[in-house]
Length: 113
Image (cartoon, rainbow, N blue to C red; front, side, top):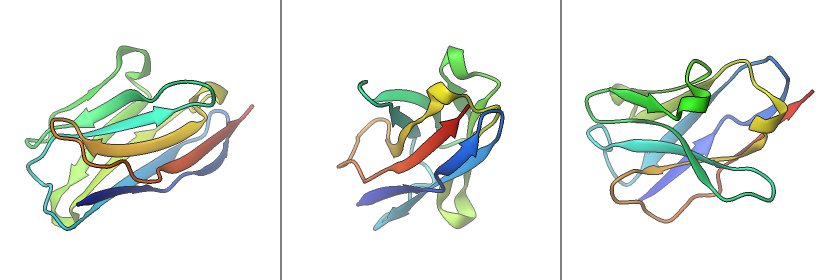
């Protein structure tokens, strides 16, 4: 089982991106899935997540800007990121929250001010 994040890229400060997380080898429609990021020189941190019922959560500092969601028909989890800031520059990953699997390569988000 592997989860792969995609959709990263270069964006100007204030812009938006939507990342996607797709799973291979499993149906993760009922699983809690989290989004994480690792900024240059920092440790990986949790940013937002969505549980099986669709309830979402975000770290307090990102509430209102980052929102996780899921489309079970597409077996995909999303991270909508709005009003991006330079400090959001990082590699973004997705993984199961309760029983993480090996980390994928992630997707790089670069925000230029």
